[in-house]
Length: 269
Image 1 (spheres, rainbow, N blue to C red):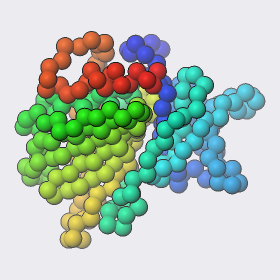
Image 2 (image 1 turned 45 degrees about the horizontal axis):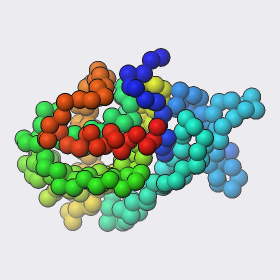
Image 3 (image 1 turned 180 degrees about the horizontal axis):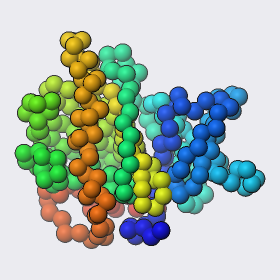
């Protein structure tokens, strides 16, 4: 299988494996990630163990494990190295004033780096996501293994036109911590992309929203947010599937800091 990208399909980063509650003591869970068959379980002390499919042949690789926000992450690298950063805990995931954590899952033909670039690509929000104008970039700050990005624009949310403040903070290349704020809704999310093989990725978005004073409104949000979040992101998927990666694209000021993000991303290869 030939990759469309001029770099590894598996950059050095933390990757989501599964929800922590799905990995039980003594139970073997099987996954297809990084072009391999993986086996995951918990030992009698509750420690998560992830190994590749060569375990039964006595030549296995043990992956570093980190649990945060109810998610099990494994560190994968093409070269032996110890991770020097972790996934932060999100306070709202445990706050009773926020909803229970919900997760949506889907797959795409793409590369993990595309999703980080896409998060700062303000120009595509008009043509792909039907925002009436290109959002303004309010903040972009590089900080080692992460960066902070904030854009503010307008969009129809739950049938109403409103301002939308979107803040993202990638942690490595495969996990993006997100905040979305409008006058009617506030959402916190962990957006994770894990490569299945060189061409396909698994996307999982775990999120919570701030409860409304009206219990009926909170109940309605529970019913519609899964579909609303998927509908917002899904228009990107057919583009990713056909997109040709151009190493030096022609960019303008309204395209967002894509070039700087690409330079930042080189540290993970």
